[in-house]
Image (tube, rainbow, N blue to C red; front, side, top):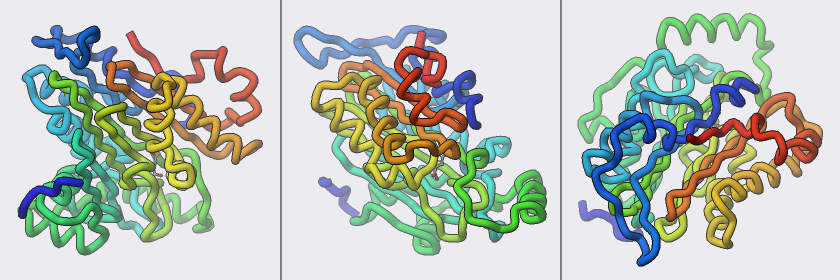
Length: 330
Ligand code: ASP
């Protein structure tokens, strides 16, 4: 089919939202620089949420071999999808409260092409299925059984996503949880990744098993274009982690990109995005929200609030105390 034209909590502060410029600086220098304006040059760059070093290393490998940002982000996040020890993404992800692992992912390229899968079971690499939705169908989103069926049609194999470890923990959870629907603070994370390639083009990917022990059928922000991820190749890209319900309410990643379009730096935009969410949730201490962003100049930013860090505290300390930003850069 023709390709569409339109188309942990405070440990975050130490583990951090990783900026891959850190990684980039550990690796050999990119071979080329790309002029994006007569006066400015940028180098390829990749950033991702949390300290997923292996994932950003993989993406960097693609970029440094002249690969596209789209290939880089897909290959990067696939590392975490395949990691059975990462219980927040892909194989090994925590199940919903019925014991089913359901995955969400989306991807977006420089031309605003995008694809997503929601609540998909039995497929180890939802990001690649999302890319197939983008490239091989007239649609943007496939959900549930339809997404899974499409994946099989595309040659993906059926895979058991529930590891013994995640199953054991879920069984423990059932004993003690009272089976309540709560927005917990412990059992979620996500990998969101943004990259710029040597042509200066931006792409992004976001993939997750969602909130641990979520209600069956629950979908968060991560596979929702505009919420969990947004890229505008003229401006920049953003991606989110944390309580998806809050990010959806503010169309978070789109907001960050629009703030950058209006002139804010990636850092300022991420801080403002978090501030808007926290303002609506004054006094709440039970959740975590973080954004990372990159602009067309290759500048990066990231900001996160996390449990025990209320809006009030954020107002008082957030801008002064860099250690709470959960972001670092070489
Ligand atoms: N945003 C994800 C979700 O709500 C979870 C996370 O990033 O922690 O599904």
